[in-house]
Image (cartoon, rainbow, N blue to C red; front, side, top):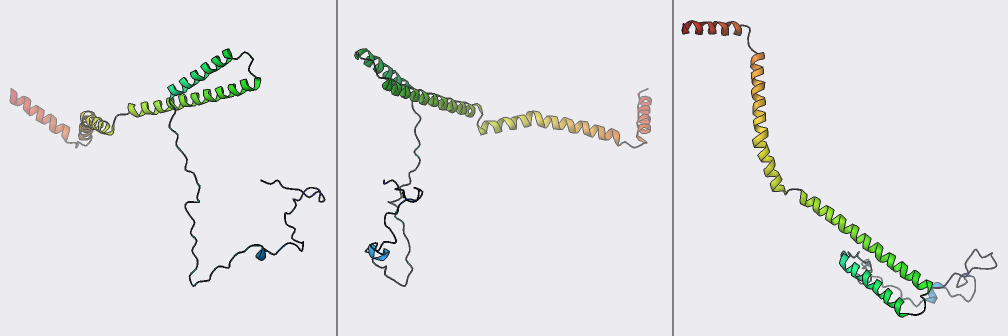
Length: 189
């Protein structure tokens, strides 16, 4: 890639043009290219864009890394470090140690992120498993409706009916009930 060349005469603010438009040696745009004119037909040309040239990449879904594999990899790297440091008599360069430290931090971060993702997956799975299936939930709700709700509604209706009966008695009813009770007592003697 070519860097912009700035015009020193204009204070360096304007880039130089690669072809000077005012120069007589510059050829017109039509003569510079050997382009054939398009054939004119009665139908308008339809544009078709090739699919093969389209390089839009689909996002790749990565499989979750296995924690045991990451731990064995970290262990192997630590063993290699110990082996290399014991084998080499000269001290490692500071730059090499910094590079190694950066790699170890990256591995640790990836291990921590995989652990966090595994915990999240475990939490969601436990939440899903703690909920009963729909069939069981519907069966339990119907059982509760039949065993608890319907009898409670029936008792409430009985109490409401009895209170309505007491509240809507006519004025002659107490005298009628007393006379009826009196006639029963006379019949018993």
